[in-house]
Image (cartoon, rainbow, N blue to C red; front, side, top):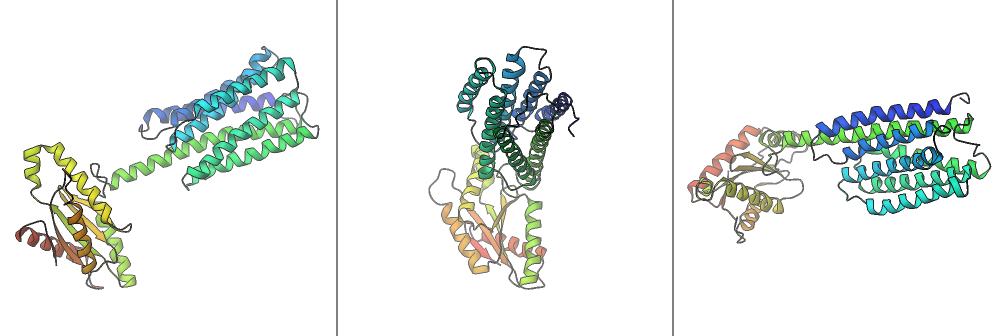
Length: 377
């Protein structure tokens, strides 16, 4: 391990940074714009790449390039990665604050390179600086990140490298800082190796987080109506089948409500389809306000919707229907009237087709009886 060349390891880190930057740039180009932060994640490895190139030519170029700029590019890449994470998770960037931090750190690196040249102090400051950025990102992710494997992977990488940086500070304090970055010692090999792995794993973590978000969005598109953001017919019927299976095990079944907006064709013909779409969205918003967390609302087709009410009998379903009628009669310009047909689970032999048929028949009777009312099967 002590015979590994630091320049070779730094070159390896640069190569991996280049590869991951290409992958993330490709993803940024082809992923939907709703997945934010990928651009910053792609820029971060490019900055790390530039930094490793400058570190590797130490001794062949001026110190302001191989020391000051190289360190600052590494710090900037880490901050950029953090800003990408904030954007990905829907938080505003904090570039203004970090710009001041970067300016101050640049001044410190200049002082420790030219006015008070001291390798150990420079390494200690750099390690503390990186640990501070990692701690800020880790704190943010623990507070705002989802409990998914990619997020937990990045958190683990940040925590582990913070431990490595802390160990480096301890080794400096006890006199094992080394003579320079390219010294082929066990300590340098360990620290540079940890950096190489961190660069790789953070980039992989970014790829996994973006891919996981894409999968989530595609699943959402496959199961939800694009206009009202309710479940689509296929997804809603699957939820109903799942609930009936649960009812077979526990003996308490659901109720189903079929809802149809009254005279909706006239709304489209009179005010136009955009107004009709606004009415549908308003109807969904009002209906959701009176449903329980466990209830499921879906668009069955056109202006017809369906509500699954787990564990609700006919009386409970009728109360929900009354609340829906009341919510749609509050005087809003987009308020509409709705007819509702209700059917409830009737025992272990119940089927979804039978419940849908009864609910549909009850809805038809509600229309026949004058609309804007609820009829139970």
